Length: 176
Image 1 (cartoon, rainbow, N blue to C red):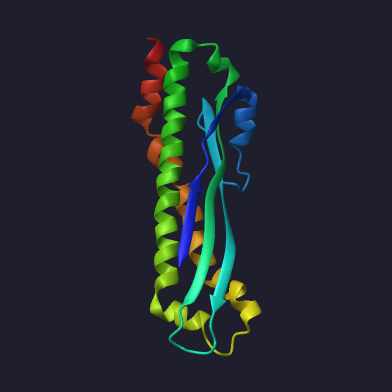
Image 2 (spheres, rainbow, N blue to C red):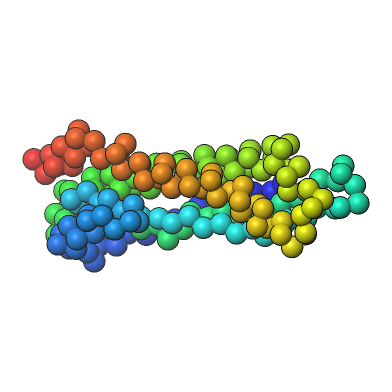
């Protein structure tokens, strides 16, 4: 069993204006909920690299290799705020906290995927003699997808933990 994880660095973008942020704040189904000063976004990708089960013996292990990646990570700061240097550092730090919280959720779900795939009943399901070897990746997907659906919900809840009233007040007060 091997689940590898990679977290790409985030990039900073200041090409978005306040009107675009307001437009992005509308429900769009992607979970991006920017605060008034900018946004953080990222995507999770995974690939099943290999699934093998030796059918000659029930004692032979199922080997699974999966790569997971937190990618396409961007922090956007409204260009109007870039022109206010006293707020820029606070705003960037705020969205960096979003990125760090998202990374923590991602890493916890890498561990959950690993734990799920190492459970005895899951390995037995994957190694079932009625399964054609070509169908093993489909079976692995069937096991992983519910875990990843939970991860999507956990990632969508991150802004609520970071965008607290005290956090917003602190950003507003940086130029006072």
